[in-house]
Image (tube, rainbow, N blue to C red; front, side):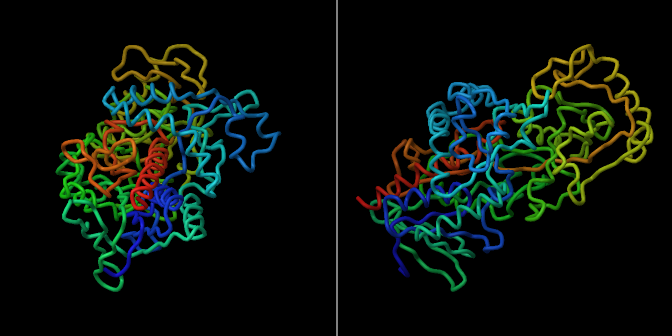
Length: 494
């Protein structure tokens, strides 16, 4: 043994840091070990926009953690309440009723408390006006129940977590891949085996928290568990989430749990690199599709762009892109909707953007059949029913008589210039993991806690199936990270 810590946390994303902060409240010596080099630290959390789903009765509930919100700015905010009951309804609805109700209940009822706790640890919050609201009648009207985000997005979140951890005496080691778990004669986990800059070493621990992500960055595991063609999906975030630590937990007797053939995957710029770009981060995402249409290589629509607010459909629509010929598609807009596009995403460097004065010319630039695209757009325009377009609510402005329909925000594409953006499937994280109890203790196949072993973040299975409510990933990481760290710290002290 080279050293001993009370708690060792594997992974330096949001879940790992929350676990470390909580463990530090109950123990003296806490260590975070991170597989990636320091320049790639932060896991997938670094690549997010920082959106964090929480509950509130009104803006007044959030004001204490919104350090920079002025009274004048607050007066222009229209923010509908979002209760734990609504959050739970969303969890059940978007997962088709397959989420673990006990775990989901913990998530939704801890959400408000955990963001306040994170604020006390040094995490700075803001309202995500530019991403989660539209200006309507002089007000910023928030939609989709996701107003809260971190200052500096995912980059800021990880920087703030890191500063807070170091200030509280938590040690962090980078370039340190966990390659094994140490166990005693009773089967309790007593530490980790690490390959670090100085070679292989054993680090003893009173308890271990696994928060090292899923297997989304491993093409072979994606193909094995998610199915055909998932090996060609692009990875939105870190290339270091390749599933080895998850496999170690299973090898140690952890119960596999959740949707192992499911994942969070979105519409991602077709020109993006194979894995995440630390500078562009989340800006390769293309999330304004509800106000446009999406067509495939045959110039045909294939999904309901307006089925719901973007926050409730974006995580499942990446899989729909992967099913299309060539795993590629295009989002189409015109001059009317261009001003409503998320500027950080649709003007990012290297974006796959095309523009033309007619639909037929746009088709030619995309390599599509001009007759086919012209026919698709004409049929869409003709199917739109009268109504008052309002992007901040489900406005019911829909199509009739075409398949698939568009259920909300159906505006005709009839005002040049016409715009198109090439998209493909970008995978964020996988839904399969291990089963944990209310204290985020890892359970074996008989539902018994494995002594000394805890999990948080993407390793926790059972919360999400096929889809998820936007912003729930960071919230889940924080909620179960805090619970895992608390349990681990108490176990190590016992």
